[in-house]
Length: 212
Image 1 (cartoon, one colour):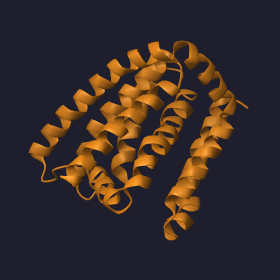
Image 2 (image 1 turned 135 degrees about the vertical axis):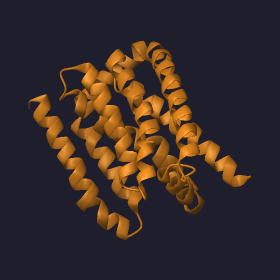
Image 3 (image 1 turned 30 degrees about the vertical axis):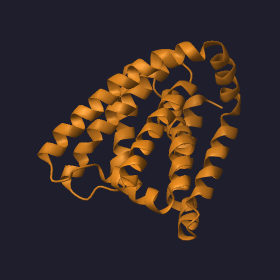
Image 4 (image 1 turned 30 degrees about the horizontal axis):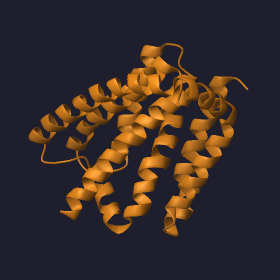
């Protein structure tokens, strides 16, 4: 199957999952099951690609992570700076997405931790990096569009005011860093690992804050 067609179908599948398949699990309060099944299905669809990624990562993983870590640091710094500026101008002290994560952690810390560190990086990197990379011919456009879409995704479902949309900027900075790391290594495991590490650090910080 043509890569562009396959990516388009995967994106369509993602939206179908989000708006139709996910709802029954949400109603039954077992969202994690739906997320796991969706993640497993994506791995199966891209099983040949993952095999190639794993083989390549065994040989070059350390080099890829070292390179990607530098991009993550830049993205993180941009994220922190933009968050500080936005919070100083906005009545919203933090993104609603982070507020939602904090509330969820209070109720189900272990499930949210595993979902944030394992499921989210895998699914989001497949959707926002792999599928889009296979569609765009221009790498610069891919990096920019992938980052902006990633940022929008983290705001659109929880935005409560016009100020909320400003938080697309910090999330997009991180998304651009992940996308750039992918283009430089041509291995999806690079942004998956970086994304997982970022979420791990974020969740641990939130848990320490809640515990304090």
